[in-house]
Amino acid sequence: MNVIDAHAHLVTNDPAYPFNPPGGSVSEAVRNDPMTAERLLAALRDNELSGAVAVQRAHVYGYDNSYVVDSATRHPDRLAAMCVLDAQAPDAAENVRHWAKRGAVAVRLTSPGGNQHGGTPGTDWFAGSSARQVWRQAEELGLSMCLHIYRWNRDESLRALDAVTREFPGVPVILDHIASVETDRDAPYPGADGLLALADLPQVHIKVTTLNFARIIAAGISPTVVVEWLVSRFGAERVLWGSDVTQTPGAYEDMVKIARESVSGLSSRDAALVLGGTAASLYRIATP
Image 1 (cartoon, rainbow, N blue to C red):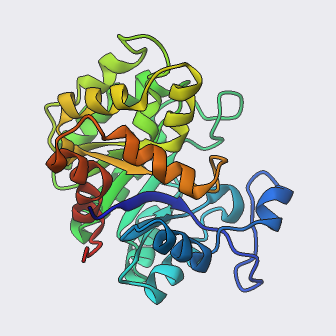
Image 2 (cartoon, one colour):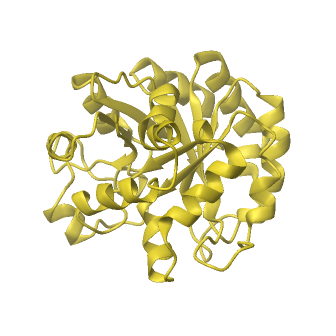
């Protein structure tokens, strides 16, 4: 089975890529134990993975996506680059073109502030007039769009997403961390109604990560239950897995082990799609 990590955050202490954290500081854990591209490639090899999506670590580098795009350029057979943008910036559309020219295959948007206490209310961060220019560029350039939705803005974001997705049907949409639907609670999961309302839109994909699995396991729930639920609603070709390494703590080999166990209740075809096939088609990662 070709396994692809669809959500691996990279960090390097190479001075050619200076830190520029929006919050003003980078934790000692990240500084002293960075997940460099070379370290990730070794982890992929050791755990028999085919490739990974290098996701910009905005908490460390802000909107300078140089390290992930350069890493993917150096290792095009194993890595694809996902850049993070401020879709409300005056030059947002220009930035999409810039990073796509440097090799990015995907755009990721998140609410400025990024948490309940500092985030910006509303949905302009992905659905406003400026953000729609980003979507338009993504559609023209053949890029996918990844949205990081939090619990505090989940419901209004999922409601607004329907219209945006229908406006840009050529843009594959990936919702990180199951769109913060609370799968660590008893079913019916809080937030699930808004997510399932998008199930009839074939370009909407759902990413499940170690962040979700950690919460699920802590609640005494088997990850297989949640993965089977997602596949039953969206189909395996619209579900994918990512480690969230660097952001979510834990040993990489444990993340991969849990991911493999999470698909044990699926058919071999569906398991292969969730663990690699869906990501390969979305992010242009060639599999052996």
